Structure formats: C-alpha cells, structure tokens
Length: 110
Image (tube, rainbow, N blue to C red; front, side, top):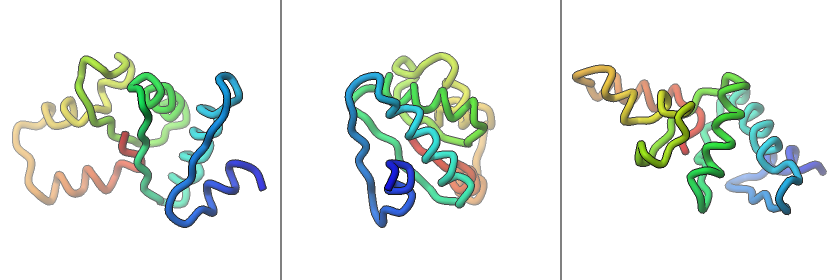
C-alpha cells in the first residue's frame, strides 16, 4: 500500500517519516489535496514552523484552503494572508456564526 493510500485509509492518524529529500512534503500535500476533496479536516503540525510552511506553500499551489495559526513573525511571507490574525483583522467584528463558518471552510489548520 502506498504512503498516500495508507494515510487516506487510516482511522485516526498517520505518521509519515523519511530522510531529507525523499518527498515527504510533496506526499503530504497530495494527501491533503485528496482529503480536501473528501471534505475531511486535518491538523498539520511539526517541530518547526518552516516545515509546516513548506507544506502550506504547496497547498497554495493546489488551491487547498487552510488556516495558519501561529505567531506572525514565524510565518512565511507568502502564507501571512492565511493566518488567523490576518483574517480576523480584515473584519472589525465577528459574530459567533461567522467565525464558525470560517472554521468550517478551512480544510487544514496548521
């Protein structure tokens, strides 16, 4: 079973491990693209902000919606438009329903 099939079919979580340059980021982006098409929600986490941002940069290319949570100074410049802080600052007041709808639209939270 390929890594993509294994992750898509996993019940609760999947771990993807590999040496540098083995295609983990590309594989993760492909998995997230498929999960987006299946209307699934995903949490992306890593031990570095850069690793998360590398995945999110690929998601931008694939038009997969996501919400980046974290300190603005730690976020890649091309991802800042997708940060919670930036999205919330574009509208002065949010109703609970509007905020819940925002969260439902975002497939990936990182």
